[in-house]
Image (cartoon, rainbow, N blue to C red; front, side, top):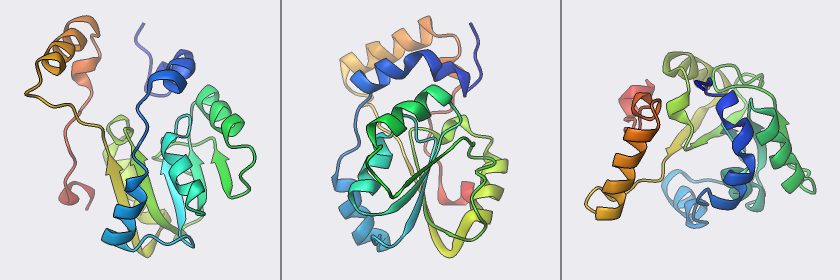
Length: 177
């Protein structure tokens, strides 16, 4: 079945919780060193899913907008992080977040930006970011020289028709301007 980028994850929540790779906690330290991430920053985690990246910022003490259009994913996130008072989960998309203009210090998208309408997202990101705000897009990358990874990629290409149409390439700074 060919599902859109929102609905395609509805029946995969349990798999995400069990098998989706977490993001290294070191991301927070890298962001502190590279862009000056501070606990006072308001973070928008776009395409937050079940909250793997959201958790990093919650534990850092940031207020976080978890923007997730898939109801099942958002429910999982809310279940796992129900004790955090610094979390607001939004039923919204990267293209239309419903976040107030000019208030977000950091937009973070972990393994999600390739699902968005790039032009609409750029406009929305520009709208919600503070003047000196930052955008961080993160993907897990496979080692293209690893034999297992090559076979896995071949398997995905041959068994999942929609896999090839998803852009898995890095986005440059110029792509976001």
